[in-house]
Length: 222
Image 1 (tube, rainbow, N blue to C red):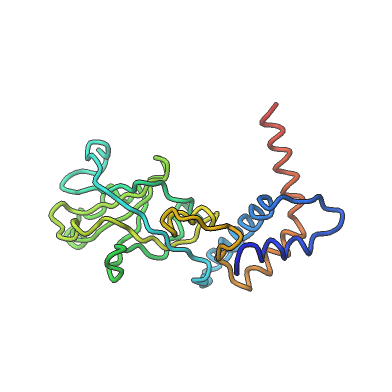
Image 2 (cartoon, rainbow, N blue to C red):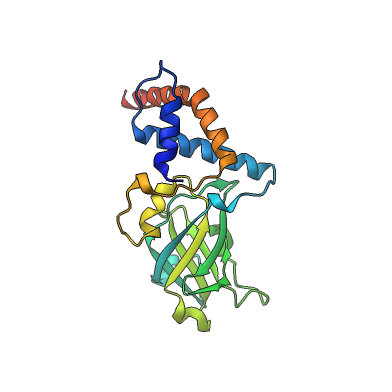
């Protein structure tokens, strides 16, 4: 369903004593409660519906090895030209379903953390593997690590990453190659079972969340 459908569903159900909410506030509440529910599913080890995922395409290019001194030679490092939208994170691990070469979707790469990237590919078993990580300490750029002699290096220009993002709207540019897509017509990654939870919680706790955020903003201004 388009995002405009979910916004309309909330608007039509709001109690009369609520203030008139801007669409951006409703979107933020949908995103927040969606994240809460997905984290609950993961904590219960329940299967996550693929309808909640998004796939973005990311252009990458060689980076000066000296800027990545913690990743020793004989590796080659590629870096994304754009920062990556914030993924939902669980215990310091992003919810990433699959990472591939956009040109060769049959190839699956290893998505790891920045700390794991230090030693990844150093063993005999995984020396031919390709590793991908996001440096959350450096503006959320994506990096690819592989050995310099890996024959697949020449074909690595774009990465396809499928995951679950905190704000799905942040992915639009990376899904449509910077083309314009009206957010109202955007297919929001949602499933019916989760929507029932989100809608109920917005109507029950949404106003409290908004008021708490407003209080925090006032404290920051003091």
